[in-house]
Image (cartoon, rainbow, N blue to C red; front, side, top):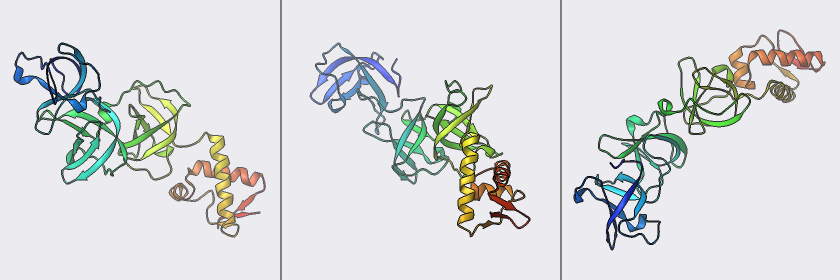
Length: 280
């Protein structure tokens, strides 16, 4: 039986000047699958040979084959390029001569032409290849990542508590708790240099955008000094400032901000009072 949307080994039955006809494995010659000569890679193919081809339906819903393998097969997640945005959805390049439709209802967040995003490829009700940005249910919970590893990933959604869902390297499901990211992120964003901080019992990978604490504190101190120097040695922020403001201005938590201010006061770099903080 031929598997649509996947690689198959099929026997060559006959040859025409414009291509080959392959065994559709139904016993009916009307179901033979056409392999156009422009999609042939192998040389010296003979009648009776078995060749590996990718089988899919073309725009006329006919079964066709190609020796050129796509970037993603049916039931796979891959990072793919958006070719066009239309009223019915967007089209993505999977390496075939025809692009694949992501129906409007399957586009869960805005995507932009020539940008790459994770997509899940499936067979739609008409038997043709289609894709969706809803990749979370199809990501693996069995990665080889360990605590301390560095990876990259795409934001694919958010939980109601602000936790970001991440597609790690096009294959695995990760999460970033709200307190582990301080810049504004949105669905479709690619995040680099994510650090693994935990592997959950269910297999999800806990991630952070933050550096290790010692580097984070050093960098925060530099940002605070730069901010003070750019404002005549004064800032209205102190260890009682609003956490959300600190998150926006300094890209940090209130806990780290207070810890850094304490170190800076101990080193006699600053003083603070109810009005704010001053360079010494």
